[in-house]
Amino acid sequence: MECQSTADSSLLVRIFEYASQIALDRGKLYKNVLEITFPHSAVLFLRHTKNTPDIMKIRICTPGGKQEYQVPVIKLQQFRLDEIFEKKLLFFLPFYLFVYEKQFAECEQDGQKMKQLKAEYADIRRRLDKMCEKQEITEYVKCMITDMINKVASNLAEGHSRIAEGVKDIMGGKVLDYEAKRIKMEGIEEGITKGITQGITQGITQGKQLTLLDLVREGLLTAEEAAKRLNKSIGEIKLLL
Image (cartoon, rainbow, N blue to C red; front, side, top):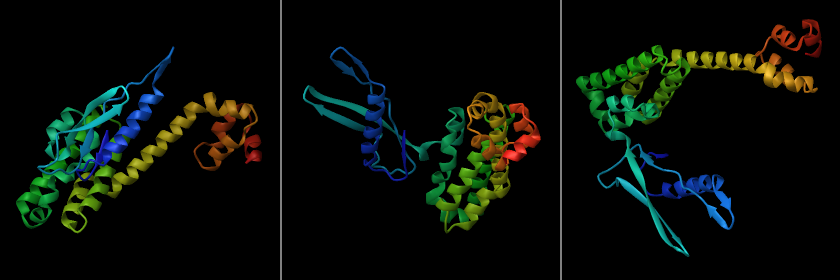
């Protein structure tokens, strides 16, 4: 899937480049035949007009004849929250503000419309929280979606501070930014701990000690944990540091 903010056909070139590379990578060669299968592709337009097509096409002219296939067009502004969550299209959420883009000036002047916009983002927050409680997504995924929503709001609503700040107030702003980073670091530490025996330990026993030392220096692994994993004393590890 290719995403673009403006509706034009230029991204068809990228789609064909990526699709043909995927087809070639997955191609099958037997006897005197190379068989390649192109993947399904689609276009996601964050903005669209009445002239934006529902389908785009790629036509390939070969010595053996012409072959044409369709590339469906997805128009983000036609999606509503119920459909996004029902189909679990969570990667649409950071761009949901595009639905309101043409109404920015009106929203800032009309208290009722601003209230409606904030209510939708409160609904997004509530639904993400609920998905997290049900373990359908992780806390980290929720925080990163929130972070991206805030980033899009800052850039798309530049010049409309009430809208940008209103979205951030609902979604959590800097508190969630920090929380996402904390959760990410916890995940990294947990992954490193679980992977020490399989990966890092193997490298160290082969004389690649710098990998472990770098982890300890960066604070991603304690000297005690390193010593335990390697059956060495803390003193030996600290000497290496």
